[in-house]
Length: 352
Image (cartoon, rainbow, N blue to C red):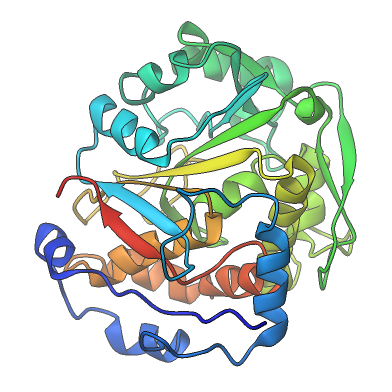
């Protein structure tokens, strides 16, 4: 039976908190056709894929009464706020827990330990996990990467595991248009549960980086990163077709979620909102205000909520321009199409 979908627009309370503006509104609404409450989706294949992918992951805290994913939000960008939005999920991670974040290039806007340390240290058996880059820089080999992790304070709050220091493991991709397999760090298999902690920001190639990028490019080994960038062709990672690259990120992300069978949650931190990624050691200075911390069990809903907040902000035009210039919203379109998650969601501000 086809699931009824709704778009739950941001409440006036949230709009006043972040500052509602009109910048980018027309082009965004043209890109994403908004539906009113109660309208049914005409894309039955997308609906079916989404529901099949969620069958093993649903719990009482994931979905609203209307059947859309819940995204929790706080405007308190500090350790207490991070703990509060995590607690709102009522998650129960168990076993060996991996906290996936970007260690960041020196000089970038990587997540600082005074913000994330309390959450990470609240888990009993935990490691911060990352993979090496495929573009050079300070994290292109394992020894250098561990040094960056130490310099950024991550080794002071947890064990750090560069998951592809011993190479790659292959996991299958189902339902993709570009990928049939995904290459992740070999140590990926050592973990029972992933807490995906992402700094939401712009990106020079993807338009933006959030939860989906963190579970695709972020968990991919150096080899896997090249594979995704090439759109699965195995060709030059810098000359691949743009939409194929964006689609491949969504497909790689779904392979990770399928493998973990629901043992994963997502938190996006919306501060230092540069148009450039934490893979850039000299990012552009942000020209918009910090927004908050958001969390969900659905990576698509989470990234979509962050996008919506940027479009609603009166000072978000630079980041909007970066997203649209790279067709960044196409990643969300592909992710929903293949059943990774839903672009419709209910936003719950836990500060209210």
